[in-house]
Image (cartoon, rainbow, N blue to C red):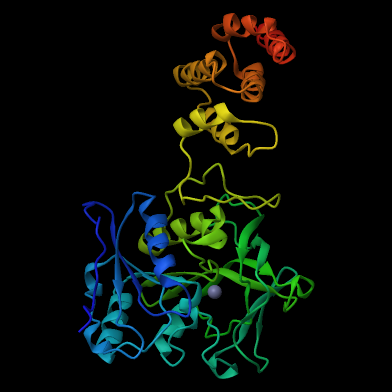
Length: 394
Ligand code: ZN
């Protein structure tokens, strides 16, 4: 018999919201997506995640009986056989008692005949969903449309990068997010339909038919639903490739998932918006699902060359911006930059970036090092510019 619940190794963290990621059946590569979901949530330091696998399709589902009540958050990466009545009823109790739930991508395809589950997800797709399951919900221009027109539930066009529009800007999950941001190559779930009660559509994406099979509607991408005392964060995004792929590596997906998970547990979000959240200008990926740290950026930037990503510079600039008013902190940051200028292994292009930074935040401390670079043919113009700016500040 297959063990009903397989706990992954490495769950030694004592603190953090106890989280259960449920998977084991999916029309997607759940062996890839579930560890990535764990990585994304673990990265915040706020969650302590375990992964539970159900039996495989056709297996004895009566053996799947997680103790929901011992968790603060359940994340569903599951699209498969019905759970037993006992397990369903334990899950309903968990949600009734104020449980948190994250519904991820194809989990909204799951359980088409389970009434309470469909109320929790708000909207779903496939599984013979139709007008019997509830309306379509989407945006037209700036209005939320609830559309009872008969028709199928669930489709998506060709995979592509697409623009996401933040629709509710004062929700804890979306607070501070750009109005528009680019998402990594993904399926744009469309024509979702469901009860849609007590649901807020936080963000949408336009399913342009010109981009390959679109509805020409602004389709819901991020939603919250309140069900009894439970809170649900629903992301329709994140189609997984091997090791996650661009849809899961997208900083927008990662950060909204982290924030949505916290909101589902507490009703609030304390996580700061990171410096690398994408804008409309282009997709931003985190290939290893981590935000680079200031320390890493200081190291990485030393190999910068023209045409390479400037994300290390952006990270350093963000760090410096955060230090406004903190004299000691700013001086330390200035020292860090001057050390790059002194580093013989650092590229000339990286030193040009640093000199530009010092031109606006440098002090007398930088002057001797910058002066020396006046003798360097590659750097003398930038050094001279920085020097004139630093010395003009009184
Ligand atoms: Zn998918």
